Amino acid sequence: MTERIKILAVDDRPENLLAIEALFDGPEVEVVKATSGQEALGRMLGEDFALVLLDVQMPEMDGFETAQLMRGHKNTRGVPIIFATAISKERKHVFKGYDAGAVDYMFKPLDPDILRSKVDVFLRLYRQRRDLEDKTRELDAKIQELETLRSQLERSNALLERLSSIDGLTGIYNRRRFDEVLDMEWRRALRHQFPLSLIFVDLDCFKNYNDHYGHLAGDDCLRHAAEVMSGVLKRPSDTIARYGGEEFAAILPETTARDAAALAEQMRASVQGLDLDHACSFVSHCVTVSMGVACMIPERGIQPSTLVAAADTALYEAKQTGRNRVIVHPDATL
Image (cartoon, rainbow, N blue to C red):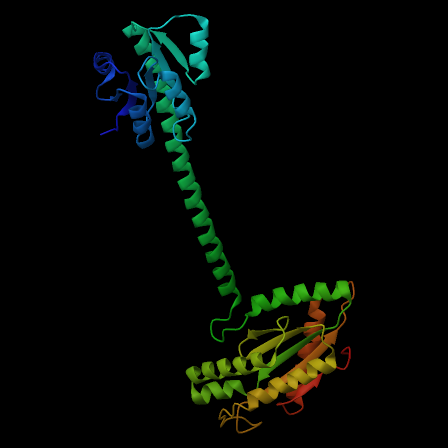
């Protein structure tokens, strides 16, 4: 059931209050009665009213003083007040009522039709205000809901972006992310004329390892190798990724070939230090890696693929000359 709208009727004569109650009280409107200014003020502090019908002539506290006190409180200053009075209709009395905060002024005896017409106007305004407040709260709730959904979507998108960049087996970056980072670092190195190094890594005789120990053991081997090689790279700007199959690649911004070769040697030693048995390797009794290093200061007109090709060439030489070693491309920037 819809909550009834309340009107506060203030008059020291009960018969006047009963007449107002008979005129308005019903399914949609509730008339709340007060016989003094003090009682009216107490009622208004605890209840929400659409309108106050306020008698001017009351003992102790007249209507003018009551209205001024209502206007002085933040919870009641916005409630419309219609004065009802039997005193002189002189302009000074009317203006005194408006100065006290009235929105309208009626003289007794009150004409029921005119009073009902005036009250209906303020009841409509009250309903419209309540509807607007309800719509505003609904809108605020929707905005908050949308803000929550937006935050959830941003977190989900960030997670999806991260997942789309991560190799599911090893937990390091995948080939897609490698290509993005290489392009970004290449352009940055081109702007600032920094050296950019690239290390290519290949697990030696890995097909033989898979054939002999099985693919589950091969997956574990890749995970362990990725973990220890990642541990060698300390700078946040360094990126290691699974390039494909048993191949890995590390991008090293602002790194000379000499420093990149030193890091590559540490990575090679870290994999060999795992001492993972490899009975089918013709290189060593344990798992090893071959590594190719390239370094360039980018120039306009040259693409990142040039650096990739140089690192791949150096890796091929490392595998051709015995594996388990680091080879630096001869054209690398030192």
